[in-house]
Image 1 (cartoon, rainbow, N blue to C red):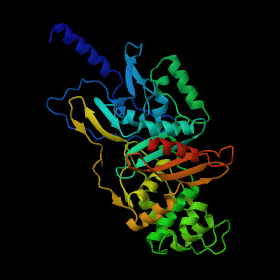
Image 2 (image 1 turned 90 degrees about the vertical axis):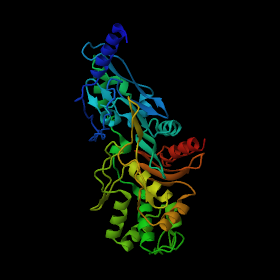
Image 3 (image 1 turned 135 degrees about the vertical axis):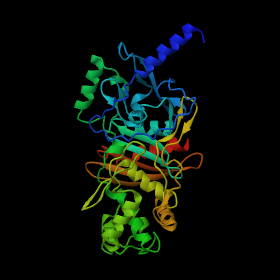
Image 4 (image 1 turned 60 degrees about the vertical axis):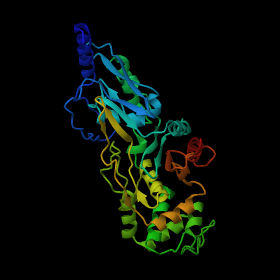
Length: 404
């Protein structure tokens, strides 16, 4: 290589290596603990000068770099469709550190390939526009996160530098009463309401208290189509009294063990971003949208839980490929295959939706155009003006996107 070219390469390399100092990490309000990705072993010929990792969605980079105007750190992060993918990427800022995948893979040279489907992501984001909430879709057979949306969102490029404009954008986001920096899909656990009925039903079926989802429940005094309702009818009609009685019949220990098998009370779930704990016990039940999507994915996958995972692979600058930790996990049986089949038949006709004056949940199993099954969960912080569940239209949009 001519001397001039070698010098240019060295200068470019030095600029990229100073783009984000190795210790630059951080967490905004509503963020979460980040777990470092396992490091691949360097090969003897590995080049460490290939530049910072780009995060890819469907093979397209949604991150990049541009001149920062700062002589000490001459480049800063840029984002394509930053608001659409901020729940996936997190942010990387010269002034405020890094979170999400940006923080976990801050030292990687190469590319980070995510599992997200752009059409599903956009459909969920459009459905949540103007609301506070979150949406998650999981491929039931692989655990791949196909959509991960938190609303309201933010554009990480508005504060990726350290100029006065970046400081102003950061202050505005932190002062926003709707907390756009909070990743509601992963980091906000709330009471799941009737969406939790599916877990109670799974416990009752697994314990053998009901032969099938069409066996009448032991609640003769129910109202509104809930008297002597079967599990199928009770799920469809939102029969709280049926599932309250069923939970007592099953017993607290069995309900707890079933809930924990689904992933409740797990303090160390990483996708690889750390997920807030979904809880069951002591009179309190809370769930993240990711956790409720996991419940549906188990039901859709014959009772087996795989994943979840947000990253397919990391391709380093030397061409070596690193799979995320747990990538090849075969999964584990959470509930009996027959129990899952029964619940899947009960839920195959549509969404399981719950609403109160404060919020709404919708969970569903969706079939994609290529025949794959998705477990979906949507949460919104308020009911729609019409009095219907505001989460339901979001699932409808995602259904249309999934079926093409």
